[in-house]
Image: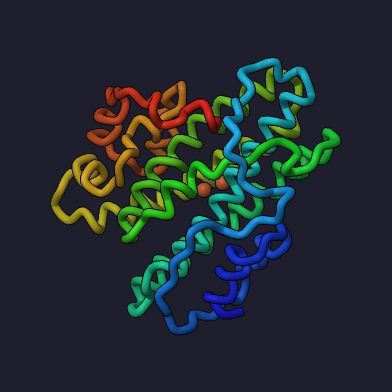
Length: 269
Ligand SMILES: [Fe+2]
Ligand SMILES: [Fe+2]
């Protein structure tokens, strides 16, 4: 399948199966300019502007677990859509640019897998994906990306990095509840996300030239996002070290504080 057909299948079809199209045997065709306001989604899985609060505990109730899994699955599907958009947005004229997109494809394949794993747990509990409102928070930020460094600063170093803390935290929550199957899914996601963050670190370290990674990250991260968005309630240093973030960056990030109440923190996990 041609790269452009692959990415458009994800973005311009509303059904889930079209978004789970295989990343195997993709051919790089000629790049053409492309923009999109929002990915197409069938009504059942469409974006809602309802303020959905992520459950703050009570996970012994199956419904609360299902609400969490519905939100987790949505973040994975959004990641698939955002990565498909990045594949269409940026050029691939040079071998280095093609290598970069192959890296995105490899992450995208993992996101499809994560989505399916969460959806399966949701189904095990008797729910379907889309039974609770779905937000478009990530898309809303990511649609503004213009360069690979903006893409990586938001996707890898902010949203996926925050997911390290969340996946680590919720793995423990579900394991303590005795829900080993869900905990194991979170563990898989956690391990994969380390490599997705590392992909971003690797490229941003090339793009930054002689700057500190922290300074470069701040200079390319589009407003209104701030590094506060790249952390969960707990700061898990070990996973970030494994993603090869340097000590200077981690020191700055760990002590970074700002008011993110305006950033709809409550509307996602
Ligand atoms: Fe993921
Ligand atoms: Fe990821």
